[in-house]
Structure formats: structure tokens, C-alpha cells
Length: 229
Ligand code: SAH
Image (cartoon, rainbow, N blue to C red):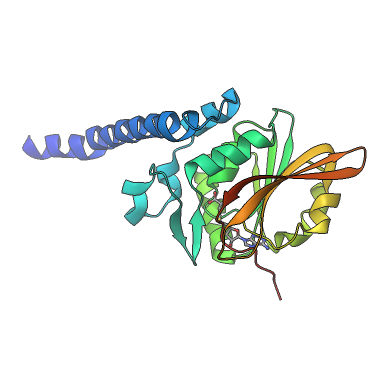
């Protein structure tokens, strides 16, 4: 009898208690870190409330998964701070019919947040193991409209271009020209620009009537944009 109670607790009660705990932490994260800092887009807020961030970090980081900071995901890379993910999502003005390109899949978290709002997400990752891990994770979690590819995102994803929006999650010294050309007319790109290992500027790039307009938004710190030799 005692053993069966223990099994019920281990298999059913404990996981649902854990889920409840994470869901409370997620709500707190959205209220205190995201809404309080001025994010208002309902689709962004709703997606941030739904995506289970604790499933995008390694076991030893789970307790910190709703903290107000980036976290290591191995290979010297990080999952971005929740507020920055929300900021980059809101600023591209995501819509349900959008096709979005992300450079820097990492854990797959930003892609998951986008995928609950837009039609398709194409995401490129330069570290093979991270790209495989993210693909497996997203498959397991049933994210069907995210397509992950291993490669150097500098060249974009030509076969699937043009994109309504592009989100770059690694800091580049310049805006890669192929990404500009793969952006649709009236499209928006958000990209951290500046020296690696220093503070960079999040730049908003807009394409109107074939012209490029860039605006400097907020200071950020991202991992460097790498190039494949
Ligand atoms: N969006 C990610 C954040 C990952 S950090 C998340 O939500 O978890 C940035 C990622 O960009 C790293 O995984 C890094 O390996 C990747 N990266 C750096 N340079 C790249 C490039 N040229 N092409 C594709 N990915 C790149």
C-alpha cells in the first residue's frame, strides 16, 4: 500500500506540483520583468506566458529558469534574458501570417516564443550540437512550425526568403548584407550590433520602398556572431 502511494506521488502528484510552481514563476516573470518594463503587445505577452522556459535549460539551471537574466546553455552560449526575448518579439510587430527568420537558435526558446504568434519560424544555428539539441527539444514539445538548420546564419536562408521579419540573437560588428536582401518590403529586422564581449546596441532595421532605415534601440550584451571558416 505504502509503495503504491509513493508511486502515485512520484508519477502524478510531484510532476503536477512542479508544473504549478513553474506556472506561478512564469506569471511572476511576465508581470514583474516584462509588463512592468513596458511590453504591451498582447500576442507577445500571451506567448511569454505559455512557453515553458524551464524546459529550454539544462537540469542544473532549472531553478533559475524564470530569473531576470540570461543563462548558460553550454558551448559558451546563453539563452537570452526573458525581457530581451519579449522586447525582440514585440518590436518586429509579429502577425499570424508572418514567416520569420531567426539567426542563433541556441536553446530554441526565442523560436518557440515566436512560433506561437507567427506562421513559420526558420532558425539557423552555427553549433552543430546545439542545433541538434534544439531540434530534438522542439520536436518533443510538439512545435511543428519551427524549422531548424545547422549553418552560418550570415548568409540567411535563401530558399525560404524573403522574410517578413528577421531576429538575430548574436552580436555582429555589421549588419550582414544577405539578411538585408532577404527582408521583405516593409519588413523589420532586430539585431545586436557592436563589438563582441562589450555592450552592443539593439538595432531596428526597416525596409521601406527598397530603402533601409536603421534605429538604435537599447544597449544589450549578446554572445558574438561567429563565422564559419
Ligand atoms: N535565441 C537563442 C539565444 C542563443 S545565443 C535562445 O533563445 O536560446 C546565440 C546563438 O547564436 C548561439 O547559440 C550561437 O552559437 C549562435 N550563433 C552565433 N553566430 C552564429 C551564426 N553566424 N549563425 C548561426 N548561429 C550563430
